[in-house]
Length: 180
Ligand SMILES: [Mg+2]
Ligand SMILES: [Zn+2]
Image (cartoon, rainbow, N blue to C red):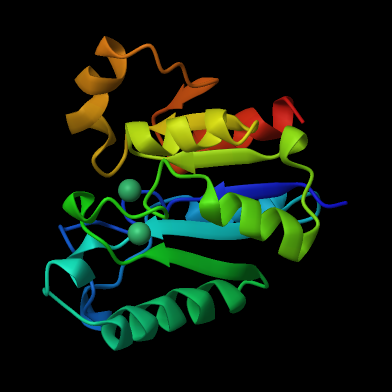
């Protein structure tokens, strides 16, 4: 069985200017390459991302696929492999069964890649990422990058407790390394 780090995309791996989908706006966040490299011997990487911009009609699946391809190729240059990107295209009002914190895609990835969730981690900049981690039986790290700072009050008010709150992606991966 493999251990996984389940990654959020926007605000975690890449700069999130809000519903980012144009390849020209693609920009990795600091420390992402270094951080993923440091974990790549022990973990496989999966991305689960809420893309309500599709449901809102701001961009299409094709735009998102091109953007995801760019991300995958940029990481590949540094020998970092993303096994799969799962996305929810719906808006919260759609009440679908795949939008985070739904564990649908974690369960799919668990089967598809034979993942041991107990030894896996979720990293994200949103309360729903932490809920996803907890609901999946993983450990979860809240990032203050992306929307993390803005939404931190929501996290504090809730009874959702991440295993760690990180100021940067690198801080998150260092925490994982110390706590595998
Ligand atoms: Mg995010
Ligand atoms: Zn959905």
